Image 1 (tube, rainbow, N blue to C red):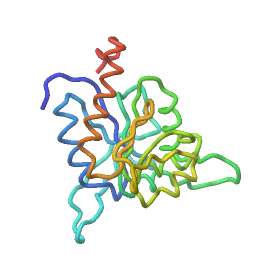
Image 2 (image 1 turned 180 degrees about the vertical axis):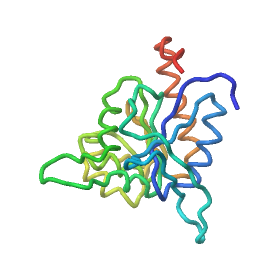
Image 3 (image 1 turned 180 degrees about the horizontal axis):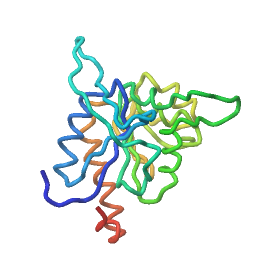
Image 4 (image 1 turned 120 degrees about the vertical axis):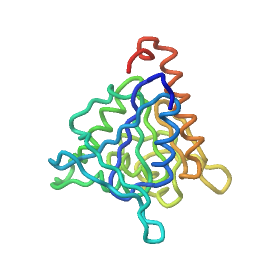
Length: 211
């Protein structure tokens, strides 16, 4: 564990999150001096417990979340990551919907604020661009990568998926948005995510001193 505290990285999470990403986030980011805080919509509860995607009918990890997405500000964090697997599909759920109205799910509303906040990096891996697809204004014309399963969703939302020969790119950085293809790229993704955070901090010394 690094002794120097550099601030928090918020991770949006729900049921059926990716186990590999969860494990590596909890190892790597604290080693680099960043606290990992898991965030979700708690539906009026003080806390909720979520499990990772089952592997051979076994759920490897659980996490208890106490941070309500409605109660936080993007400036509380150096970066925000949407964890992979099916968790982000669950976070875009709305109880009530109206024709022509933008998605009002709390996590989607939070992303709108985060995307408009200077000096906060946003990251996705694999399926987690699903949350951005809930409001195409979030990724329209942005260069991204994602799992092959959701290319149609991402392109229909107006994003520019980057290809390398016959596959999607491993990693794409477009301004404040860092996207990774799948959990096999999680280490490269985390390294680049931290580099992007620290580039911003080096240009803004006051930000580097914030915890």
